[in-house]
Length: 308
Ligand SMILES: Nc1ncnc2c1ncn2[C@@H]1O[C@H](COP(=O)(O)OP(=O)(O)O)[C@@H](O)[C@H]1O
Ligand SMILES: Cc1ncc(COP(=O)(O)O)c(N)n1
Image (cartoon, rainbow, N blue to C red; front, side, top):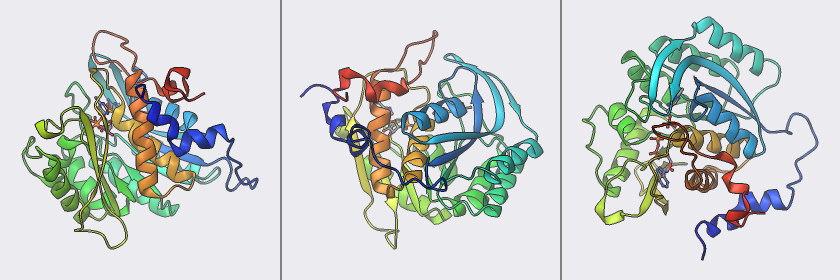
């Protein structure tokens, strides 16, 4: 089997090939996703990654920018948070007119921004909410103020359909030392503990996991669902691609989940398809700049993947 041939079997690619017939009503088609996140001038993460992902996955992407970052493959040079008023005004403009079938939050930076966004999402009754609790960039630069963590826990997670932390973010949310989650079984325990903050699902991403027993694999854990808190979570696993060019993996995963949810997929299906989409984009990552290169979002439709 050629690398990533397995992607050809995904429901999404089959759907694209078969030209999925969407219902004609404009309230349903095209499916729409609002991303509420920071701008990454380097084009690899944040709003830029989210909108590329939406376009690739057949949904109409819209944005409310929470902060402008001057960023490239080597790191974050500066962060300019937007005034809350400007963020809420973007959300009103989009949600009050075009509407969104799902929303995704990324970099929210401060307690005040988290609280304001949470309350605005309530006003519009956005139910399919994917919260990516973005805290640090791949080079380790902080993308949040410390006061945002508690607000994420108390104000946003209870409203989320799914929260998608990586391992350091999960430790921060749980208030344990970074590096505490060291194995897949630690991930399962942590994912169940994160459910206590009130999201319906937790997708704990294992890109940072260094578990010798699972070398060669990139494993995520999905916990939650109807009445399943405390039960054994699911593992979603795929080959670990040997590359350092992973700028934008987290944003693209959360945006892809939002896109699939907007298209009507159930959570497990959306998470599995998102993982396949991101795996292809990592396999074809572009080593632009002198640091950590970015994903290539069009990879899933390239002939090399047997998808056309
Ligand atoms: N080298 C890799 N090969 C394959 N999949 C990866 C790799 N690194 C991360 N992933 C996957 O990419 C997604 C994002 O994971 P992660 O890197 O943990 O998030 P973040 O970008 O927020 O730090 C997860 O589904 C994870 O399993
Ligand atoms: C504006 C912004 N938002 C999020 C990230 C995290 O990126 P990643 O997806 O690699 O964790 C980033 N570097 N910049």
